[in-house]
Image (cartoon, rainbow, N blue to C red; front, side, top):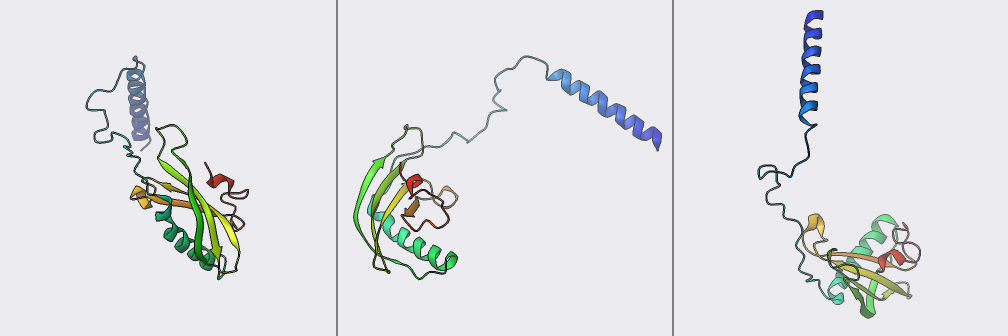
Amino acid sequence: MRALSLKSLRFAAILGLMFGALSLGEARAANPLELNFWLSGPRYDGAVADCDKALPTIATQFWEKESSFWNSSLKITGFAAVHEVAFRPWQSDNIPRRFCTGEAMLTDGKMRKVHFSIVEDGGFAGYGQGVEWCVVGLDRNWAYNPACRAAKP
């Protein structure tokens, strides 16, 4: 039993030295077999929906978050003064986003600012457009704190 373990230890050491010696050569570009096939990278069209298209999603997700996590009966009943703030504000190689802002009327009778962005390929598992949003004063988990500033461009 002991002879077998010493023999396998020697074999592993020799194998390690051989692979180590092979890696000491100069670095070369990947050959065609080493390249990643069908992984050409993201291709964004910049086709992002208008600000108004995200409003039903925001209202639904707001109600779900408030009722499920915060045990609140708050709902968004309507939007006003919704307008675009920026479109692709950073370099063109970044994921296309349309940043918008507006005011939301809530069931408590207060108007609150809403900052949101529509993200190309930002939906579940990168399928479809995703919406990231924040209602000022109701960012209870501080995801976009302070005062939803992280939801702006």
